Image (tube, rainbow, N blue to C red):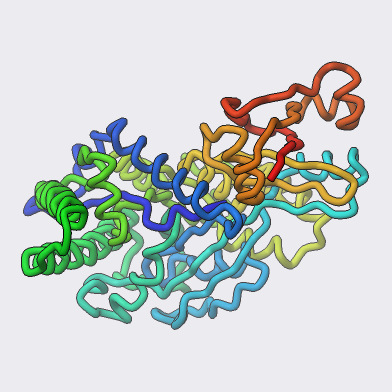
Length: 421
């Protein structure tokens, strides 16, 4: 999956309360279209080098369960989940397979030698505190670590535990969210101010460079004004050219956010009764963001159980799926991602694409030659493949379709590409 590395979302403080519901009311079609074009360009321009790993940055205050969650869901996680601030000194990066039962079904039907899932990469940084953007705690060093992620997962503490100190002395999800959001905003404002000053001093070398600088200045002025009015940059209507001109800044608050409400084991089955979760839900709704409820402690306990016992353990808690599955599904939905499959005797593999991609673009995710020399895509839906029992049987039953260059790939399509280079 190509990384939408400098995706957008931008907020900022105002003199009154900076996070009123008006902040996120302008999800314009232009913003959506710009994000689509940005990711689409990355797919088409670097297909042969594309990683199948989606990248998410994990942020939060100290002691909210951030590193415990990271340790639990990432196989090679090495974060020190200790009960004191700033214990995670360097960003921890780990790659996790995206859970998808369809992959194994297809692999069994095709008698594949191996199955290859899509993956998601988590980046865990040190806990932020108020003033981090100005160097408090461990400061801006860690904000820079998440500038190139696709989305931000903000872990919010929604449990009481006298043995785990809260950095601000009490559990208050709304206050915690404000602290983190403001630090992201301040960091981006500082970056925008510096960039505007640099543009004022510089001189374009040619007409093309001049046009690009003018587009960037225009975009930055619009964004800066929106920020000072307490509105996010993603609410600002930008042309494709303006959006492309500011993309290199990788503004933190341009990125979509999922709020991860970390609850106690006893609240996992019915989080709606947790007043802290209600607070997070209200804030997420105001900011037009997503919320996922998870218990980092339960996720940690799952890693210690044999695979065959994990489902039974979850059922005993009143839930049917691990928090990891919920988290990844929410991330895919937030970023508008889809999965298609290739399946044969050698391997069955899941591929991540952007919703709306055509067959040639989806082929390009495998290799640029597939897109350049695309002829057609032999396609069957997942359900029809399973019902037929194999690709060959699907072909005999007339379920296998021959799709051309204009075909928009659907969720769960099983595809065989024909190309000539």
